[in-house]
Image (cartoon, rainbow, N blue to C red; front, side, top):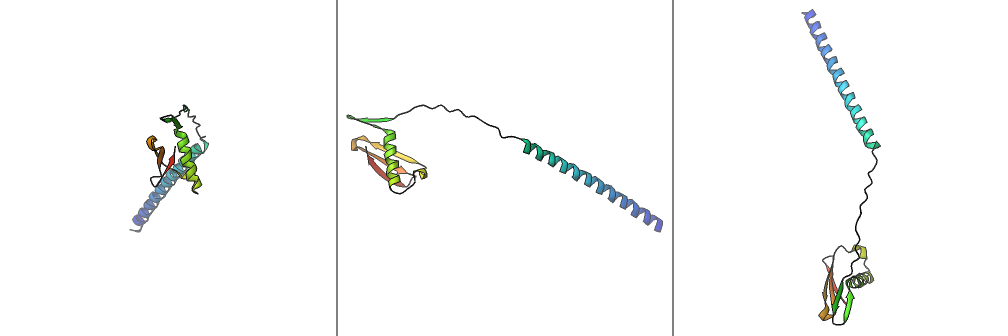
Length: 120
């Protein structure tokens, strides 16, 4: 039985060696593939995209009676008032303006929280 056992052990040992070699070869191949993929990513250069936008000059006027006011002047007044109150104009996410010419007033809501008005 000793010869059979030794032969079986030798066969098992050879199979283990084969599996180790196969696994090692597969791991090395995976590492090489990963290195090649990483090299490709490193070699890529950023793509420059030029975005063209059309600029259209737009002026919105509010006319009532003999008075004419530019909408952007009203917005500028509101932003100036906001700034004078110690707040940063860049913090404005939303600005809603409601113009009431019959009252000579523009009401506003900033960031859905702060409300106020300016005269036209």
